[in-house]
Length: 161
Image (cartoon, rainbow, N blue to C red; front, side):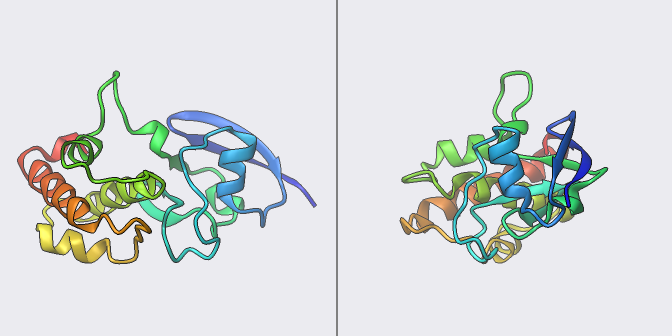
């Protein structure tokens, strides 16, 4: 039986009516037309579908929409501010930390979520926190450079996250 949920998505209060067990990923992509978040494995293992709920990273493919009710969801579309890329996006772009780009939104959201929880994390700690994220193109060397840059930039200015 469908229920109505109120979710703040990227700063905008949205209402959706859906089966409460339906994956948040489907609601974001199909109902709200936010297609930046990607479907990878459908099991929460690859983390291509990572979004933030109340600032914490979650696999949206396995998170039921009911868990987002009355909460703040941030997708890749919601992290730029005033036409300026988020510092993690800038780091990924500067280091060519993507190849096909499919996993990139999930990687970026994972880094942001990790830094939200661990603002003083070292680059090595951040890399450890990103181990569950998979890149099928195997562009890990550039992703590592981008993560190290993002970590260094975050240490200089924690208010930018």
